[in-house]
Image 1 (cartoon, rainbow, N blue to C red):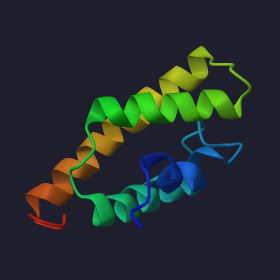
Image 2 (image 1 turned 90 degrees about the vertical axis):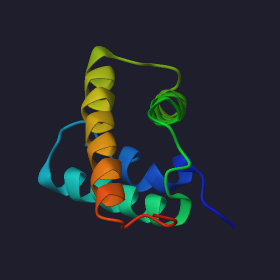
Image 3 (image 1 turned 60 degrees about the vertical axis):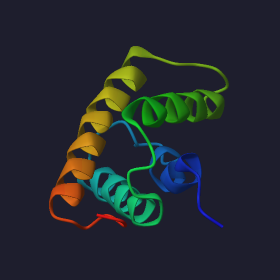
Image 4 (image 1 turned 135 degrees about the vertical axis):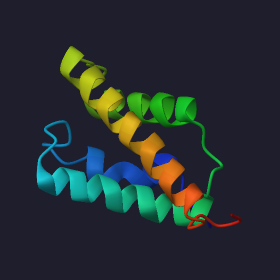
Length: 96
């Protein structure tokens, strides 16, 4: 059964430090991207990525959403886009 975007990124955003850009969080994020994209390829848009993760993180924080959260999600969205572009350009995505 294919994993959902939220399931794929839980190891990253469920960590208390997900928003800090620490090397460990970066590694966790990159691993989540790679694993998800190997299963789902380009099936997710940037808007889906942002919307689904914002909702999941906000639910995890009992409905709270801060400027810090928004800045971190924006930062990691840019990384997600770069990773998708790189894997696509180098034909490392399923169906490339």
